Image (cartoon, rainbow, N blue to C red; front, side, top):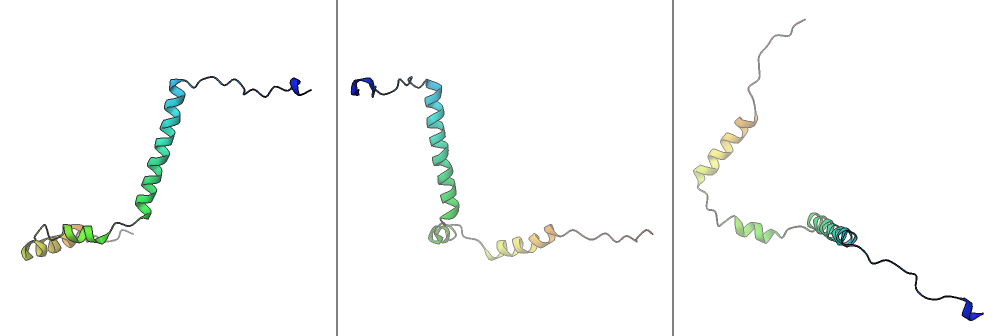
Length: 85
């Protein structure tokens, strides 16, 4: 009775090149997505940003000009037209 049962592994064909390429491509895509999600979740240390600012010295005049031009560039002059009835 025990000789009637066949416990040999089933015959599975070897994966082709395209199947392997698809398999590993999906793994790499999943790893890339996890890295992107972790980059959004994990905050960037502030010490790196603080060190980058002093390396670029700015003059007081340069900051004043950039602050003065920014509001004027974003706001457009209003047109004065009469309402048509």
